[in-house]
Length: 554
Image 1 (tube, helix red, strand yellow):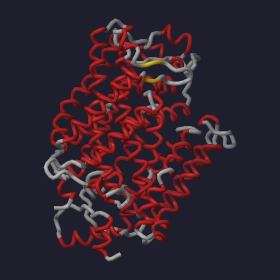
Image 2 (cartoon, helix red, strand yellow):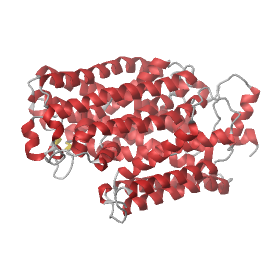
Image 3 (tube, one colour):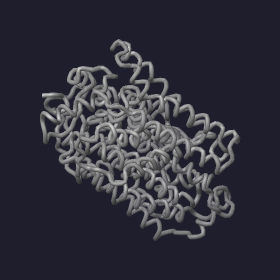
Image 4 (cartoon, helix red, strand yellow):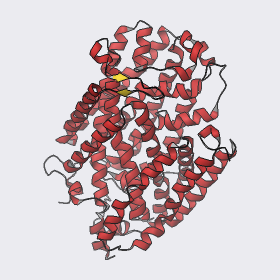
């Protein structure tokens, strides 16, 4: 039995959808509305709508890939299939960084919300820092670390245990945010708040602020949960139906909840708080609980404090499951130690990968001690991880048209192009210098890739580079444009606002077309074609890199 076949397919479509929804509605609902309002004021409502539309376009391209290749950790494999090992490694690294750090930020969110509890010891868990978003104290970090261990233990024995516990937690998480939005609107809604600007002036729609909020306020960070059903495709029953259903329903339901929460937050903030500082100066450690206390809804605040443990914990448990599958997938690409691809024969989970993610989660926990700082980093890394999906799905349509596609997306050439261009815009909206810093973070992992290439005798390295030049050139190009862009997005002003957005769109289109043209029929795709011919009717799960080269003779 191969390691991939040892993974158990125990998760049905509804449970898979709840996995995605549980990932999306995590700490983002506790802090996202507050952070988006700080950046965009009342325009934050549009930020959630725009963010949902952009992520839906991106997610649908991954739905076809996930149904086509239903394997654990699939998000880190698709670039490898379409363009070879270098593109696959860069995409996998970005994706893994973006997802594994979520485990830490969810634990931090719970600890940060505890700081509004009435007891003195709780108030010491989180402290405001001048010029920053605040950070957890040592006691707060220890509580967060304990929660990370709980997430780990829930996934250590069985994916079935994880799926069952996640269903109950997600249903609770869906009810509480919706109830909070309704009660806040009924108890203390101030329509005049929607006319207050970011700095207390009369509100005017600031499109640049709205776009920045989409990128770094926790919106992309929240909707990134759509990846969970894709990464758990190896455990899904009937992936051709389950994965598209899970992705579309999870994003749609979450969008409704988040828009309601944003409207409720803007309307519930006391008018006198806005009169002095505007939205930019509104600073809460526990946004919705603090509002509930101000409005005299102590019982709601108590319920929110409980949910502040449950909601992030549900997401943390989900991401603990999916990140283990990502390292498992990266090992199958041939760029990580083989032990990370080991699946427990009884419980069907990749335990060595889970241990690595636990250690990395602790590193993120102690280097980034507040929700706001870590959420911004995660958001930009997430955007980079989106880039290969639209390109890979169109490339595989060209290089492997004969492979079975249980879910074939209509209008894919246009939708994939739009998804890549919007991913490029998202990266630019995140503002300089954050864009440049995260791109550098993508580069620091390349020695790992070159180590495994040298170990393999630089086998077929020229072809790998040929398939990767578009991405290698893309990242510094975007960094340069971000640096030179308009001050609206943190740039030096060499490009004026409006023209910078147009240029970024053109760059996105050019690199999308170059990326699709650069793809080639990799050994992994050729191996699955051979296996599909020999075993018709079975699910298409490409073998690991070593097996693929042995099967194809390359």
